[in-house]
Length: 409
Image (tube, rainbow, N blue to C red; front, side):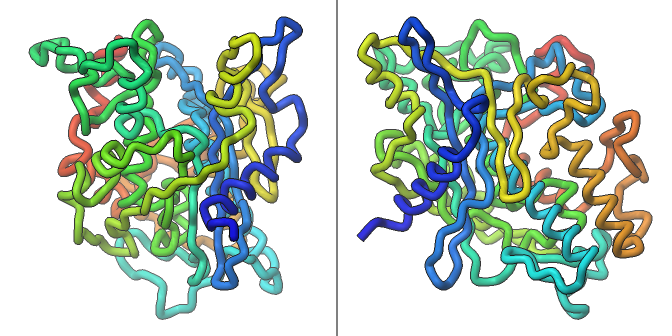
């Protein structure tokens, strides 16, 4: 009998296979094959049926030097597969919530409207929807998440896997957080990308982002304005057996690793430290790094095209925006971008006659994304992030990042 982990992986593969060729890795006339990481999110009901509800492919992120072009909220900073799958999942949830708001007879398979005695009266206001009880959320990744969870794999790939010595004084201490450098430093927050000769970015590694999701849930800030996070946590993270190193996963994500200070932590409105299990599958993605490495001519390279999918949306992205559109033009904005998801929330808000009190958005910064202002903060969620970064994910300092990247904070 096929394991649950294999069934989840297969459900993601089956959706990917249906996508158009333009968003898949290519094989060139020279025989060179492209590879790309794939991530997907599936839900499993009490009946055991596995349903893939989001996926993404990708391995790139925006250099810090170009961060100003994303000031409209239409361009993504980070389009690694894990990040795109999570954003796609959030878009799906917002779209389902909007359908419920517009048509009370609409029955969502994943969301339900909360009853009055479930609604919070605290400072973060009312989140009228929640993910249905009885649904487990599982996430598949075709590669070990970049950053701390993959450091052993990186070391094993070197001719000499002896950890590199590093001077932790002054500037070197900060540079030690970059990508895959400083192998002897484990359990730390790292930036993307991995190559030491690549331009610095402001994006944290997928290991760090997934570790944080164990406290904030899979919901993004905008989504958390309308949906309770209580049932939105990953139950199981699934990676190929070839990519699994128990010590790395426990150190990066586990309650006995760097997340140990968060054990037992809980906040208001359904936020809590809910660690996921890490399990493996024997199945390999057709376009994984290992699958393309078996190419007869031995040549493969990374794919610069990303796919994003959920049951309500599919698109092809390049450089954090829709393929075929000029960067900076709002037509290039994917529906999983900050701008588009904010507009989805505003549509929900309008349908429900204003579900948020005026002071829910701290300092009243953002009412919409027109002209690109991205200043809103949800107080309780911000406190969860602050506590987690301070106590477990130490070194997550965006101000220091900008200085290293040549920006003022």
